[in-house]
Amino acid sequence: MKIQRNVDKIRREKSDTGSRKRIKGKKTAVLIIAAVCVLLWLWTGMYRRWQENHSGIPDAVSSRTENGECFLDVIANTDEIEDKEEFARTVIRMCRENSFRSLRLSTDLYGYPERIEINVYFHRGDVNKRKPVLRIRYETTGFSAGKECGSGPDKKDYVEKYKLYVDGKEIPCYY
Image (cartoon, rainbow, N blue to C red; front, side):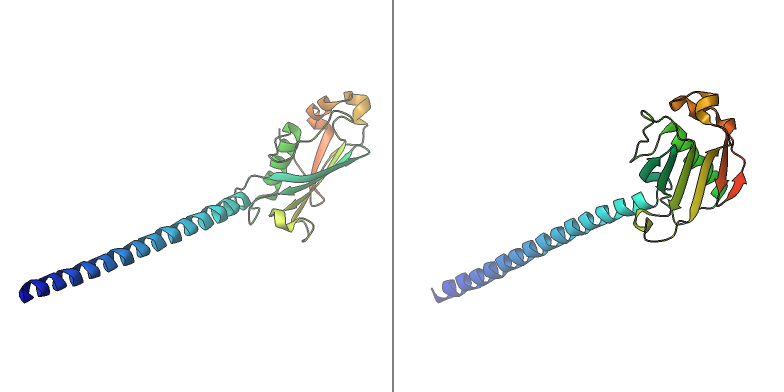
């Protein structure tokens, strides 16, 4: 009988260590899964923010219209603008097509503006905190757009009557 007790005692000790190992293994697995979930949550949020700030697609973040002039703040969503002239043409095309993602320009009440002043920043956080990296001006060539072209939103179709300036220098505008 003593032998039997020793065998039972050994079996109990083995089963106790096995359950301890299982509990420790479960705790480790739960901790690993929790850590992976937290990392995924952080990574997806940070990646989305990074992707939004580096998409390379310009977006208007604010606008103001006074006396036939429109003032826009546009973000480039990139760290640098390689070709400023091409970027300016893209932004003006987006203004004419009203294709900004987070802002729509209204031409219902006063029609298309005779002058558009655009301050360009690299990222949303730079607006009104740093100087603009680029200034774009798109304006009529000394005529009253309302008299020669009619009034309303169709004035934008008379592109030959507008001039494009980047940082004060006139550039050709292709449409």
